[in-house]
Length: 130
Image 1 (cartoon, rainbow, N blue to C red):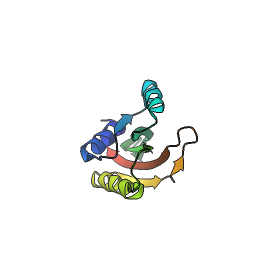
Image 2: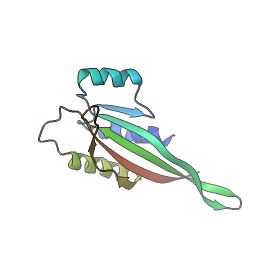
Image 3: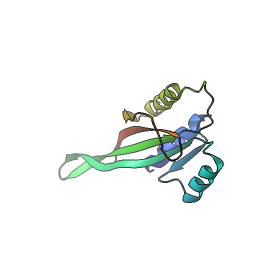
Image 4: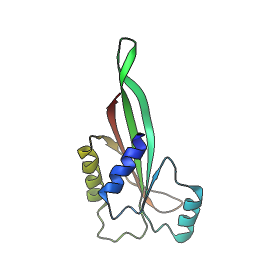
């Protein structure tokens, strides 16, 4: 199973009420247009591959693949003032850890100048034995 599909399933199973849509590889153009026109009132999660390289070499072959994934969060403009992004992201990271994914780093939150949405990224990886 591709890493982005596995992460998508983990997040889906986690049933985070604050994540409205989960996409792997790309957000369809028509969805972006529709959301922009509606005022970006949903939180989207985009999961993309960052690494898929062979590792653990011996005898001219490899025995593991390093799988890396970026989880990019595009927060709704309509989240309640009581919503805690930090606590929500920590819960997501703990779920990923419980499913054998290592948290490599997180990016600082920033505001998209075009949409006004807050955006953040979490980078995770794991070694997949083949």
